[in-house]
Image (cartoon, one colour):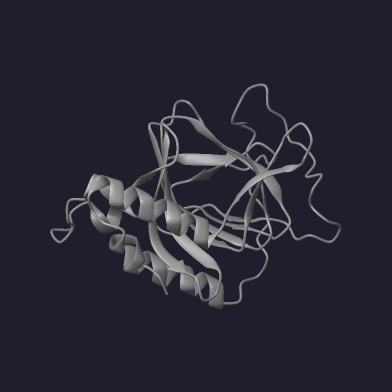
Length: 212
């Protein structure tokens, strides 16, 4: 299944698509949250692309006899509710591909992307506090370089899993000051995976086999 998803991401990255405007949804992720201006987005920055339904994954895997039972140790914990499963560490081109999973509601702190991001939602739903669209299972999202946003998964979402193709650095920024407080890139994600796989018994080489 990971190979299929990587092929799909490669297709999205290499094909030329017309611009699809973000789908608007009146339901916000929090009742007290409203759309905000992306203060860190430079003049001339492109808009998001949100395609609500690319395909229905349940039709592919529900009755697949070749689907192997997953080893839960492949998921690298980041917080109590957030973990990621790496699929590719492309150190030669500076990007990584991983599955991001939230158990229940949660927040991935405010951050800024230096390069484009592609996302494909597999199950559950999520969105950004600064936008009024909502990504559900089958939704494809393109995030342009220079955007700053806060990922939110609603409290009533039992589980959210999305595939993210992230190029360059993800800079964590303070909501109060806008100053950079930390970062992630292919090298930091690789090191986090190595440390976890060594701790859980899979071994550091389990992460290294994903390096390209």
